[in-house]
Length: 201
Ligand code: DC
Image (cartoon, rainbow, N blue to C red; front, side, top):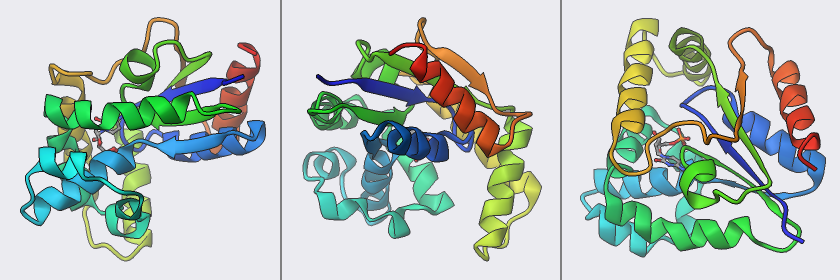
């Protein structure tokens, strides 16, 4: 039987780490749906039409090492407002969600649009300031030269675009458990997520 866990939330709230750890804990497959939008965003930066890029997406395009940059993240958030791009990525995500044995999907609209019937839904969030600080540490740790102010402005810009778009905006599903990680370390956040899923099983 398929058991689907939907994990949504804004950029840099800890969703990625939590999703990987929750998937490992329950022995489920995991899909980071942001990578799909990032791969399309990367194609946009190369001059490809985003709708065409979304339709032609292949597994090789999801190589994380090329997709974890701020420029690609911003491009991903821009292509994500295009309804035709979202529609082209829908079937793949839905099929993944219902695969045998179950799955964890993380993104912005998993609990609301992709998989409203998911057995467990989490909304992982944190204040913009805390998320920007975490992102700044991660980027400078990887050798990028950015100021904390630039990172905060980027986080706010991406939040606004992801939340205010007409199609599948970022918001918690009505039946989602909201986990605010502002005051939590990653271990506490993972434990809270696992406890929330256990409560739905
Ligand atoms: O989670 P991420 O930072 O990798 O996502 C990059 C962008 O992709 C994000 O700003 C908005 C978009 N996205 C989306 O619209 N829907 C999803 N399910 C996942 C990501």
